[in-house]
Length: 141
Image (cartoon, rainbow, N blue to C red; front, top):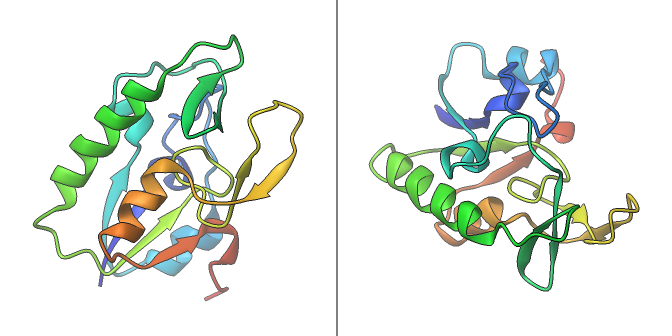
């Protein structure tokens, strides 16, 4: 199986605060499969670390109220191009992320309030017919 995985879940230091969300459960689950690390925010040109971003009215807005949507669109476009001919069977993505959230994202108020919805990259993958799995929902192996 070919699996796209949020790079932060693999231990890559690409998270907004410069760290990662390494998940041993994810690493165990993907063992023996072909893995393609993805981080559309970094691919789109955002730095690590970076000011936290949440989605508000379809836009990616950072805590300083700067609109960084174009960085997200660029990262999504480049990452989708990278994956286009890969025949991806599954994407395992970072929960709650404005890019990768599969089920819930923060509401844009920077108060840690969650709402149902997908991050921008997760939505693009879903629209392309790629099955999504939230990193929190990966079964124990």
